[in-house]
Length: 374
Ligand SMILES: Cc1ncc(COP(=O)(O)O)c(C=O)c1O
Image (cartoon, rainbow, N blue to C red):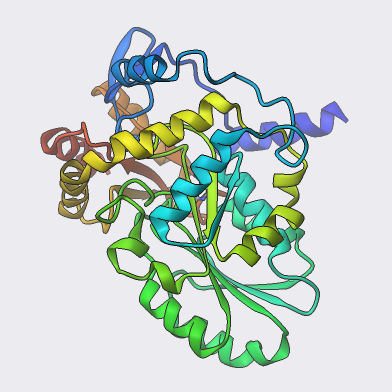
């Protein structure tokens, strides 16, 4: 058996697909330390700088004292729950003005759990072709049929709905808001229109937009004034919030259903109370003061040709992309090659993700390096 794995690994190496965990010396603000080198980190989801910030950590620990432990020791439905979990759920559902909210251990847990149970036999899910792996994995576990429509192609989605909707009982449309690898934004207004016209439920994954878009940082659905039109909104705490975990917010019936049916929620030990308290503390005390810097970051992303703070620099081949990261590394920038299966074959890329600390010169110097060498 080991020989079999070994041959697969050899193949991955030959095709520049091999993944390994790098050794970092540390991270702070916009920097990452590798082999005694201080590099500007252009590959972080720590969009607002809340993770790794010593002052934030110190302030939080002073607030938290010894009130929160480092282990929940059980799933929420058993003994792994305390008031702070419900408090965070209430904070989220109040912000979104929804009936209820359910915490998950990560965005991956949320999407796998939700998409595997939200539709059953005789039902159907329509999913954007570029939706995150966790959504795909969830649908694969589901007993429902699913279709993947061409990325952000609303005409193709409508054609599919017109052809297929009548063949199923319940139907769900699922999309990311800011697409994680392309940085473009779903046509949420049209998704809402289609879900109403074809009697579907709409799930929106705001993983990369929660904490970044909208007056209160709730996501693209907030900036478009469409929160109340979306049945279930997913957000993560592991990115802009600088913590860990995720939530789903929506109608109470849906939240009760997920509490009873989402296996990734039911069968996994809950996140530590200290972590839940940190997410809540950031959302209540820090996020409300970030509007100006979030806007500046988004404007910078737009200046670089993206619709968001995520800027894909598409190179094409795997090896060329890894080589380009090496060039950037030698010039003081940390970036990561994004290769298939994360992105479609032939579209390997450097995915720049901005944080509010990165300035215009740093960004455009890195982009021109890539353009020069391409
Ligand atoms: C769109 C999207 N949803 C969900 C996730 C998973 O979130 P988490 O990292 O909290 O598991 C990611 C992670 O990159 C993502 O890009």
